Image (cartoon, rainbow, N blue to C red; front, side):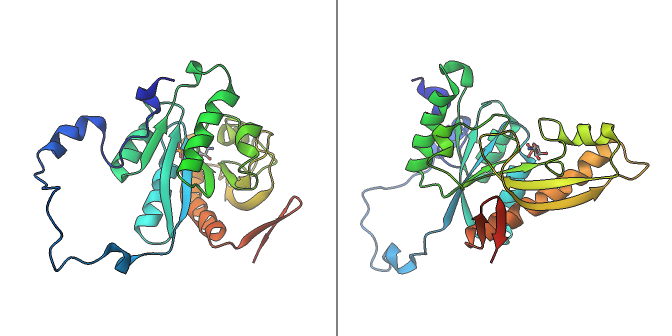
Length: 246
Ligand code: GRF
């Protein structure tokens, strides 16, 4: 395996920033002073740990990180998984101090092979929930098995209408008057898993594809952190295909 691109980079540091850290003068042999407190005095309950999977811009990743910063969402964004090492979302992860696992699918013999690698990292990082946010790949049984009922996705249309890679454009061109956003559990189909939450967005006569996309993204950025919060609080349950809130 080629380590360079697959490494989980140290949180908050891009590789280029390493020199700046070398200037810090820390005496690692120093004894703790009599005033230092045992860290366990501050022990916090374990946080719900999420991994965000993304392939591109990462505006949803950012919305989740920002919701955590504003304390509207009490989870640990522990990991970004990205299949495009050059994607903007990777820079967002560095800036936010989130560890990034990047890989190039072409370097693996099969989807199952790279998912086995991802699974190893998810387990190592004790990830509770996988949050797909613009991750442009189908998920196989390699991840769906161990993470059954713990992988969610956001889709920019009201499923089951307009599944696939261009939900916004497909709805706009079809001419529907109402589209929206869906958050759903992931199964082995394309956008077919049980629906957790949906919010409608009206398409007005003067909307363009661009204004519609902006409205959809604004709803996504509010809805996804809300749903993650409800799941992390243990308030979401699956009954067959129906999702029930407690
Ligand atoms: C979002 O519209 C999401 O619904 C879809 O992919 C897009 C990702 O956008 N699955 P971003 O990378 O979060 O900005």
